[in-house]
Amino acid sequence: MKQGTKLAVGIKEDIVDFKRTLLDWELRGLFLFATIIIAIGVVFYMVVEGWDLITSLYFCVSTLTTVGYGDVHPTSDISRLFTTVYVLIGVGFILGFVNVVARQVNKPVVARLTQFDHERHTRREEEHKNEQ
Image (spheres, one colour):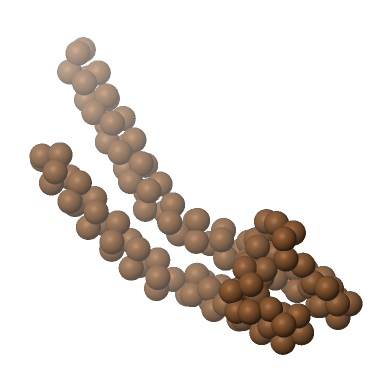
């Protein structure tokens, strides 16, 4: 099989794998919950802190992914209390979502590498038998 044909087949398999990943119930549920958590935070900070949509979204994502640049921070006591609870609840779910995404993305790669390794091992065994 030509190299270009292998590449085209690989790309087609990647697209099929991506579509299959989008249908995964665990991923879709975590994505929905992550979206809800972020939306709650965005609305809270827009209302209580008076931040615009982009600043609120930026703060929520950087906080829940534990990046926390510190350039934007809550200024009122109620916001600090909310942020404390928000982080305790949200970080675990966001990291769980990231973990599921990484696992789903890597599944087809690991499967292909395992298949490639098996084929290589089989070829070596056949070559070894032919040498004897």
